Image 1 (cartoon, rainbow, N blue to C red):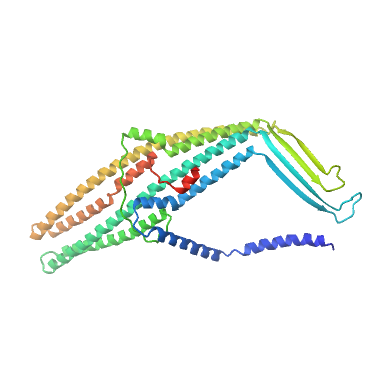
Image 2 (spheres, rainbow, N blue to C red):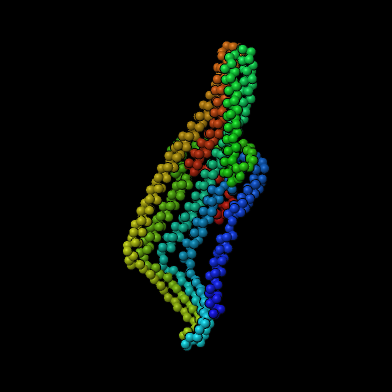
Length: 460
């Protein structure tokens, strides 16, 4: 048996063995363990570097612009569109292909002088008239620009998400502090009323009512503390950090003002600058190019080519050959498929324009709703503050009268419970206006995004 035959049998076996070894080398448990250790180590290092001091709202937004996964994914999507644009541009460049081979014969053949010889080919082609590539590249350019707008809009959304998470943590911290104060006061009241009940000065059920109020405050406090841990974890996730890390907030939130102007003015401003409308405009232009590209299927294509070949076979008439010329192609009939594709492209263009109109209306109603919510939040905060002042004055009056025996003690306890609820409502509405204004800014496309290194590099 010839050595070449053994070699032909061995190559498939070696390939199969390599593939089998590659499949067997993956151990899911080990891979999952290694990734967990590596990822948690990276998160711990990042938390140690970034959470060493109390964070302001600006600090959190800066971290989110760097570490948030939605932001990072948007940057990667934009990079893919940039690469796609560059790939589309290569259609205008010449194509060069080279090949080489080596032949060896085991058996004697008639009129064969060489048993072993090599061959080589070099082919170059250049499109001269290929209109579809122009529109393909134009669509790719607009796609890349749209990806940049989308990345900026994602950042605006993350700014809002970070702000809301930051305010929620502050609200919950204030709620916990208020409930701690209420619990201490409720325990003191329960102890005093229990003493009065033991002396027979008040009914036993009034003592139970005071003790129930203290237990209710304790339950609400425990629930608020657990919710605070959840909200801190959500904020840390938004920042791209471990939800289990310890974080402290400085409470610095900066200044914010309600956008000036009537609702109509705000709507017009949003229609000028909103990123969603900019994306919709790009999609319409891209679809216009898709229609033109579909029309190009009816046109001929022309290209220039040149091919060179070399061989070491002495039986060849020429060891070196060059062929150059023009090549053209024109599809005369393909079962009306081109016609159908052209009609489909026009319908898709109509769909894109219809989607832009729907986005137009959605932006308008979004601004109207956000402006109404901002005003509702401002009025609600003012009313809740007034309600707390009234409830506090009522409790002070009832407490004094109950101590003098002018009214039942239960009325004073009810007044205290109402005041506590009003206080929690005031605390929870403290940042609602800020959140509502931030929502209005996003609805208008006004949300400010801090400068980011990755975004700056993408612009270049």
